[in-house]
Image (cartoon, rainbow, N blue to C red):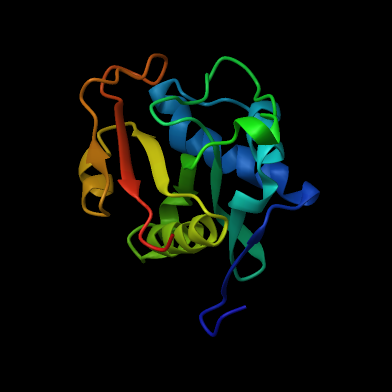
Length: 170
């Protein structure tokens, strides 16, 4: 744990209720909440790229990222199926990054993103993609992600934008 009481670690079995609650608070109003089993299936597809952010002794955020072909993304209506190792691409798809509302604006999301970026580079990923939802495109643009207007991410809401950036550490 850091001096400020913040720690980023892999997701444990005991974290799923907290992760699902954070996800529901972040996405239910947008109609994009997936539920615990779908979230867990995404983490099971790539446990080495999914993390919990602890503040003190409690989960206060998380990030789920998994290998996905460029310009593709998870279907929110169904659970993830692990891709065979031969089909893995150089693209890591950042599916969710959530920080508890009461802790936003303190740089914790950036810390999760930095941790994920270092992990992606160490694992040989060349690109990180995501779908910006809820008018978050500006947030992601400020972090080096570029919109791909030709990709219309179905199922993610009317204002969803597919974005990506080249991984700076690979």
